[in-house]
Figure 1 (spheres, rainbow, N blue to C red):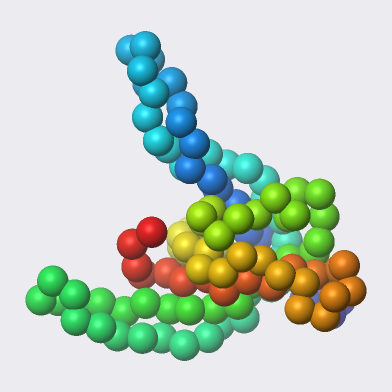
Figure 2 (cartoon, rainbow, N blue to C red):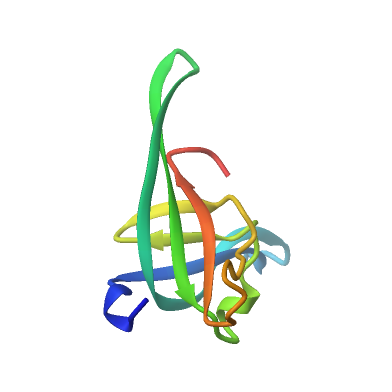
Length: 111
């Protein structure tokens, strides 16, 4: 894969405790870093949830392996072109080349 195929900007976020201004704290999504990525669309599934038809979309996301991307965990999420995706699988190096990380992501479902 060439750098030119990394056409998407992926903003990774993690849920962290942040001060609420009143002496306590609350869970909030915090931006960690943005990298170039390749979004590879997968399946679209429709399911009946709470009496309404909802669609979810799964895709594979590929990023370059770096000190930032090595931090990504399956409980993070990623924002691409304004759409928020949950990371459904811990990122892995599919070819064991130490160049790329692939992860299964899904949009349209709760975290």
